[in-house]
Image: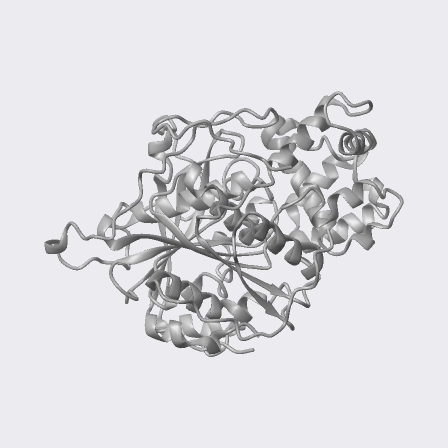
Length: 504
């Protein structure tokens, strides 16, 4: 498989050679313009949270105001990079109107076109030709958390000196798993997203890559919490619009994401209309997404029911996903002091400390060494009660306690229904992926999208691994999205490989 440079809509449409080698119901009772969300979990109440009437307009109402500058924010941007992660001491009350408000902004760095080119190619993207220098900023914006609480997400913002066109679409990037500790925020890592965000920016697009609320900013990120992550991404689109003049952008929004970010972006596709988006989400491109589309996603139910199996038998990521998600849920939906409720009491403090100190690979090794058997990963009462909830009918079932019934309710409501009339979807999956595996995750997610009425473009990379599937296929992803933006027929994936059958 190969990729070639994308420098125009015409080239994008023609460049097929970029080719890749429990229904939850509606959580929202209304779209009242100024009603903030109420806590949706652990009880299943509705939340009036968004408005769908705030889409942008492709027309330029200020044509006589001179050319738009895309290379620097039109808002004040003089914070230090360290202050970006600290909320201002006084902010207006949170409301729908304040979603996406940029409360911190700091200059970061500049990449000359040649340096951007070298960075993208160095990340494994072949055939790429940069067309713009890129100015990088760090910002923080307001958003809601999945629980209904207010939050703040930091982000890296990429602004081109030579725009691909004017006005531009809004581009939002969802990053993959980096860890749970504050130092894991991708915006703090100059080497991050060179295969996912930087290619767009170096081709002249304005890009925002949220860290997700609670990662680097106060709180705990809502790991694989579909609502929580989607809100950060949807409000990231608002934030980018607020950083530049209104006439800088069309109404169109494109999102692209890998792994955890891919799952968040599929969730944004499902929630864009009910949560509300400033503009229209027209295309989403996901690479090996980590999307909880059923209770046994990431082997979770199987782990709970197999306490005597070796932890190492769960692979290199499923144990990490389980621990991250449990910690995030109890921290965000119960109380910060309850974050360890699902962990064995004797090792809970050490586990959280290690979780926050290591990246996901290091933490996975720690779990396999500390808890050689799967059952040792869980508080015994939590595991046995949750198994009773799963095999029974939930709350009130013999052996199913209220705490675990609430967690099961969260897991069920976390399974979203994709929007059959929403953004077009590109799903890229590598057959050599041992993290988000093609049968257990890729094929089952595609089947879920199809059952929801979405007809995704599926591109299967026979040699793609979890770590390189984005670099190998970002060119095709950009070509595909550019065609959607232009109202043209997207190029076909050149791969002749196919996904295996779903193995749920």
